[in-house]
Image 1 (tube, rainbow, N blue to C red):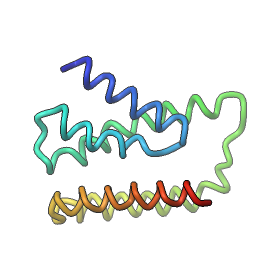
Image 2: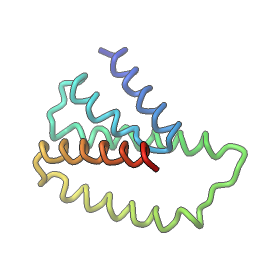
Image 3: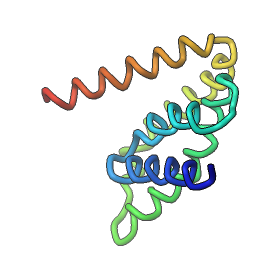
Image 4: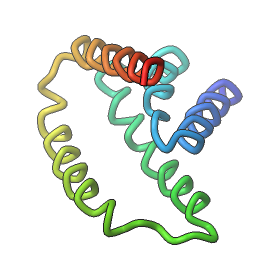
Length: 116
């Protein structure tokens, strides 16, 4: 089990590091299949794994070059507010709808990249 979950984490880290996002899209389904977490625990677990993963990706990608903090600041503020709202409201949304929403978001993103 440890090997499977470590490989799942590595896959999420690879996707997150290469594309700057998307590790959670890998983690949510893998946590559902590889762990005994209840459905309502999968999304918060994914977020708790993504935070250090994003910090590592940021540190590695910024080595030797400056970060565009001025450009990123409005997004950081908006994402912090969105994260707070999701944390407060997320528990009230049925898990099946969270799974469906994530699936639709993945499909939409994939289609957007296929036909730019």
